[in-house]
Image 1: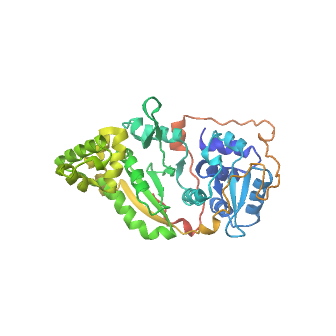
Image 2: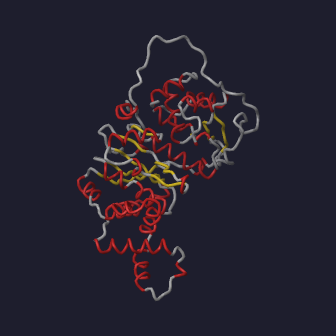
Image 3: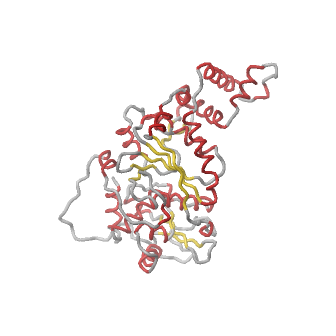
Length: 387
């Protein structure tokens, strides 16, 4: 099922195509939204059309509503099971209850999609695997961005574990977005290193860092960290020392058992006890020696020099603090904010007269690469989009 198929399925519930496109975007990327995001998405002024649309979502039970710190702001959680089932995502994590601490991150993630409407976004794991099977056919599936969960017989790869948007431009450039919401660098380093194999295999890519205003002062540090982790290589003799050090660390996970007479170990511990190598060590424990390719290959440095690879930063000039919910969104589906029964939404679209036209569904990979892009006017807040 591609994006347009999902839009048609949601429109069957009585929504216009524009409303259905917005709802599909919300359900695939965030689960929560506020009315001003629909105004930006649709390219219309905030007014009665928007109010009527969101009132209908609440009244028919398609969304639950929460009050925010600002007494006039309202937060909408699209969580009706029939809508998610219609788009082929009945078990989506975005339908589940949301802790209050995660709501603002999700709103910012939706803005990262809405403010750059000219990109074709990939939402599901299957879409991403299909796309990179075409754009990076030489890269094995197990080398795609992943983490390892479980152990022994239950061990498996969880692909694309970072909850960050991935998109394709009209020129075929892949845009990896990272939304910076925390001053802690470790999660970002993990994200960058997980994507290194894929970046090396692509002909054109952009790492796009998005910062809320309060984090804008960290832009240079994040860009420098990304460049260093992706391009800094080691000489052969230093790489051999790193492998020896990792092996020793695995044999003695507790440093207390090491005596200070083991001068070689402590010398290398001092040399490699940095955030970059700590993250690399964690990956080495699960992925093995393949992680060392990042430290020997000049491919990413060459791509950045040629311009086929880019690292860019943008500031989202929007306020979010006033949108913090007063409570976690753990309310019953059929209850509103005040605990009043809102009535249930229909479990399936209303019956309509059969249509004479039909839609051809093409191969999933073709749809990902050739799906029509949305072209809408957005306000000056969107910044400069990546080519």
